[in-house]
Image (cartoon, rainbow, N blue to C red; front, top):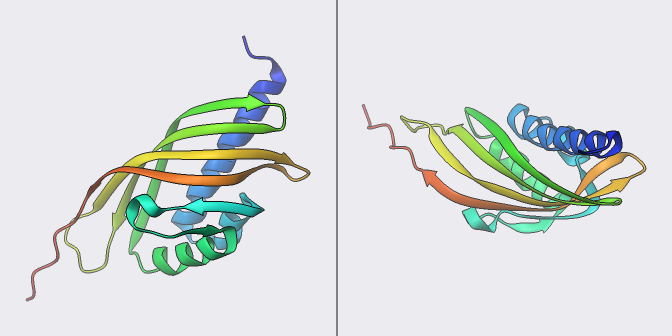
Length: 144
């Protein structure tokens, strides 16, 4: 059975993952940036997106996601392996997106593979790899 400290760390890490999703979905770019360490590396290459530093990728996410009519992440099935002040995390994601000009929702899913570190401000993501496993592309709206 897990001790209270382990449970508290796992809940804190899950909250950071929820804040990541809320930041993306609500357009709260300061919240999104806050979940990462300053030297974090983020990799969205599985969807032909970029890989780079926290600031580069948060700017790319802001530019990309701000164009959408709607986005909603569901992140679940957290596997958290704690090792002192570090943690390896894998979580499943399911994301619904309303792309302007498209008739149907785009639906995508996969895994977030993350490395966390405990900082003076709590747990932060030091690296994130989006392992996109599938994507349902919407049909363009026919011209009227």
